[in-house]
Image (cartoon, rainbow, N blue to C red):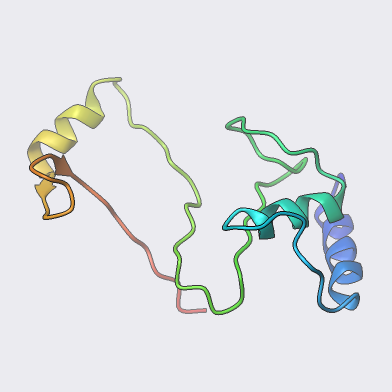
Length: 107
């Protein structure tokens, strides 16, 4: 798939197959299955897994959030400074400061 049009056509073909059993159990099964069906080799590198975009998938009705991107600011020590200045401690963080930002889409 080199273009968005090709990806949309291929996704349409996959959708027309109806229910497809996952190729791997567990939380990564949906993404692995989609990559297999699209002919994308599995990898763990920090670049897009398709020619033009990073694919994201989730089970229907899932309440899990998807990480769309993680970009570290410059200079290199900026993350430490942001965490120090704006981080917060939660019960789950066991005394360590954390910082999370969530964006919600309405459409």
